[in-house]
Length: 347
Image (cartoon, rainbow, N blue to C red; front, side, top):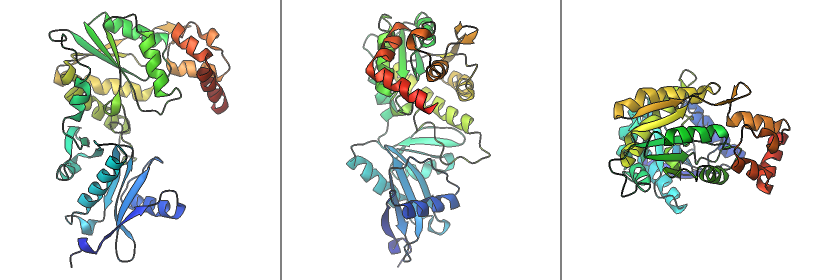
């Protein structure tokens, strides 16, 4: 009997500390360091009920695949991928994604996944080919042909006068401006509120279209962390992959030739993101346009500055130089007051 048929599948019950610890120890032996965000995990075990291969997921992202060396070539990975894909579909997600080291991309392609984009070090794959292009194409309009089309990606946590200025300056340089709001809900201000504030705060600009960023723009899929080594330049790896996804899948579907960003004096990761785009985007005929940040009180207007001031006790009315009316009004609402309270409790 071959080794593969001796293996049994076992769900890892992540709510049981002993089972979770067993999984994390196995991943550690394979040099994987997951964030504490796994929602489902499965494993193949031997006759002694020891884990010899595993995989996990968080939402649509399949991750943390590890297979013992003596099982390579025994289709252990295929069994894990099939189980996790089935689980995702049962949860209503019909296009699971995988982020992996570039040298493993062919292994997942053999399991039925299609590569969206890759760098020298990491690659992003999805179950349904062309999903990223279809996601973007939904925002295309029939009269867009021949127009100068640009894009901005923003988190808007929250929407500030700095964001408004960036949109105004970009909109003046193109016929259509797509503004993608990061959908990953890991910010102080929930995605639904961030999206609504950007929509309302730019509604007077006729050539601006605001969209959710979806799973392809600055998401946990395009900004992976779990398999990074201490010696890896995580910021470079993350931002290059995200820039590749935008350039290879999003921009062509919408005929985007301009990507606008604000200069970044404070956040190292955002600055690295801008530098990665400066390297990647021109290779695909996309020009990166950096617009200087506007200042208030000799400091750049930024969402992080707004959050810091709110957490320190400033009222929305006191931040009039930083916030447009739409954001000030939201912060006066019940939802806004709850966010301010949370900021002050956790500062």
